[in-house]
Image 1: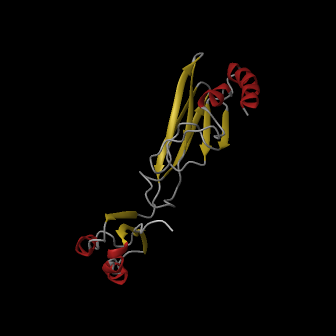
Image 2: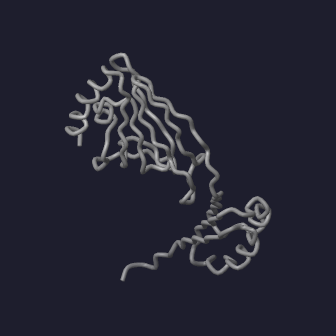
Image 3: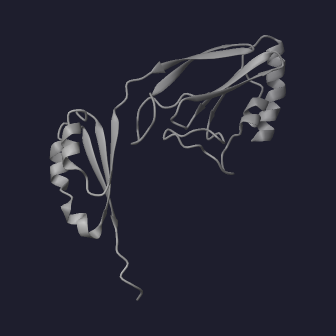
Amino acid sequence: LHQLLTLFGSVNARLFAQGVPTLLIGHGTVDGCLTEHGVPMAGQDHEFNLGSLFQANTDAVALGHIHKQQEWWREFAGRRQLIAYAGSIGRFHYGEDGDKSALIWDIRPGQAEYSVFVTPARVTLDLHFDGPPDLEAIRELGQRCAGAFVRVRYLVDEEHLQSVDRAAIKAALQGAAEVKLEGNTITSNYGYG
């Protein structure tokens, strides 16, 4: 892929010299980008690195795949190159950070810019409890959860598993568009056998 982008680079350099704007559109993961959960992507299996994308020598690189809007740019050889993920227009997973958006590009030779268009997206809320869920706290949050997609996560030991009133939690959040309960149980180790 790096070799292909480098080949694009020589053609795009000629187009730039002729005053023709260029754009590369791609779908994949850039090493070091942030996911929609705010976690950096690092590893050996990502499709792109920034150096390769800049080697394509385009004015702009518009990317899809990662649901968090973000950008990188560099000044090089009398031009400004811009790489950006649009993000996603909707919130598809619990725990996604930030606004959801689309990008409106303005691409001129040596100068690419975009405007962020924030899109309406469903609201997701995460409630976390180390131990049995606090039903009183959930009831207090109930109004704030109206129309939202709510995930309640809790971690309990086997002894307290029966104290979790799943029906009462759902009743307290009855105005939510969806209630997802995710309980994890800590099991006791009774020896080897």
